[in-house]
Length: 106
Image 1 (tube, rainbow, N blue to C red):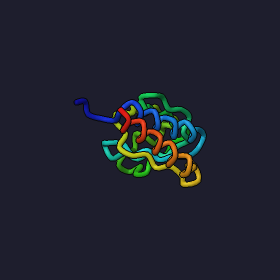
Image 2 (cartoon, rainbow, N blue to C red):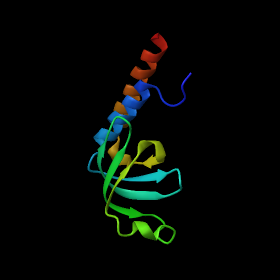
Image 3 (cartoon, rainbow, N blue to C red):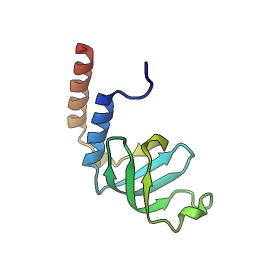
Image 4 (tube, rainbow, N blue to C red):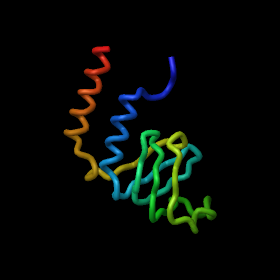
């Protein structure tokens, strides 16, 4: 059995991220680099493009100080922090329930 998320789970996460376009998010990478920026795009592989970025620990990552925009491959993302105002929790809960019901019917 393959590891990772099912297609339905990825589609749900993708839909959530699409609604966050043009909002500020913080992306934590698997190498412990934290990047804050404006979410400009996300694709079905959960690759992320950020504009107007800043790095949390500039002393540890001085090479990132000159970078203003970046593309982050989805497979290197550990965690994405989103603003509480950016999520309609009721809509997300409903979508999660629908996805779970679809999975149990299979």
